[in-house]
Amino acid sequence: MNDGSISRELYQFLATNFHQDWDLEADDWQGIVDNYVDADPTPAPLQLLAEQIDELRGSRQEPELKEFLVRQVGVDYGPAPLTYGEWLKEIANRLRLRSTQTGPGTTPPQV
Image (cartoon, rainbow, N blue to C red; front, side, top):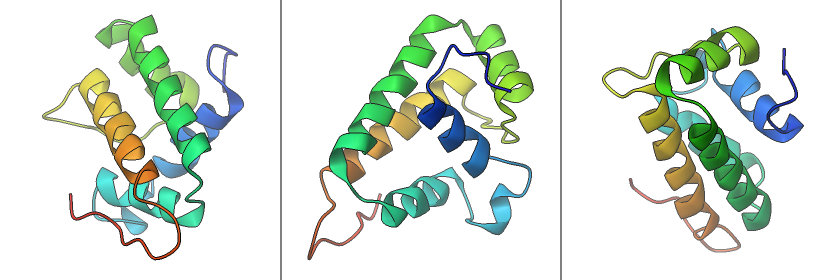
């Protein structure tokens, strides 16, 4: 359950994409993010989501961040060998990258 410290949009992104069956939707976290972007490739919301991820990373140290993501948000993804903070940074970077590569006639990046 969201404790109110993150936006509803960020909570929904994390909880509905990195749930216990995430691996039925994609092979890795990059595929999950790409599927999310492909479903609604509007740049502004993707960039806002990336900013909110950065804010979340900056608001908690690693042990507290992991605890929050797993117990409060319901994330069921282990990012090893990355820490949760590093993983979130990679997600934010991918959202930013994909937000600049969306629109008519564009193809997904090979990242």
